[in-house]
Length: 259
Ligand code: BJW
Image (cartoon, rainbow, N blue to C red):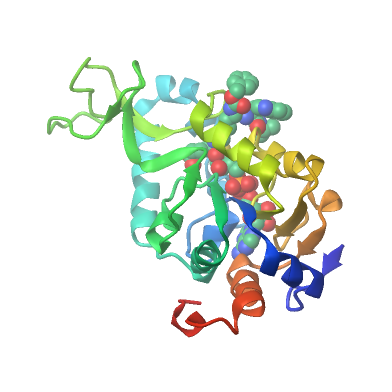
């Protein structure tokens, strides 16, 4: 069902008021209003200017580690300058109001945690962590050097960002938690993701198969759109605060929340 995003369906409001288990999958679109580029949008996506095959695969890193390291350093800098937006904060409020909220993100920017969300599963890693390319070991400090990328202080191999590249497996524990949340959720939100990248793209379908109400928030249609229960076509930074206000706006303390 395609909805006017400014009108939150009453039925969805009612279901959210009584929900005890909610799962939320987010993608790059939720950070777009913070000024962080998405991946696949023609005009603004990072990969409109850079070929992902050259930058976000282990093969690319083997071929040109310096280019890949510098690309991630550039993205770190952009994210450092960004702030969470009203969409991130609305999800913090949702977590405060509902007994169990699993926030599963494909984003590596850390903006959900910076906004204050507590239960965050980072499926594709984190831009601000580093690990050893050879041994996969997390590394926090390394000797000052002119090498780009720097070298692992334990084995001397190159260091790399601790993110999940194409062809790499997601952390088994993170995927397990995400799949479990999708199976048990009464309401599942898919927000700001093109729903193209697996296995994350399977999660809403898992939730649907388990009988959940599935809500998509995205200005553009995705391969998931025809299947969802409610489709709210607009920016997450507008729709999510409105949703929270309609569901819990009369609750004590709502005026304190940063919407
Ligand atoms: C707004 C908005 C606003 C704008 N408000 N919305 C099954 C079938 C086919 C292929 C595969 C499969 N299983 C696995 C694969 C292979 C591959 C894959 O999925 N390929 C597809 C492209 C077809 N998957 C993998 O390789 C995964 N590994 C794996 O499965 O391991 C097992 C295995 C190993 C070997 C062989 C086979 C299996 C790993 C995937 C890792 C993805 N990594 C990246 C990079 C992370 C690091 C980094 O950031 O650099 O993750 S790729 C990139 O895509 C990034 C994102 O997290 C991910 C998803 O993108 P997202 O978030 O959806 O962004 P966009 O830009 O695509 O969409 C933005 C959306 O926002 C748009 O819809 C806008 O409209 C919307 N929007 N403004 C709300 N204001």
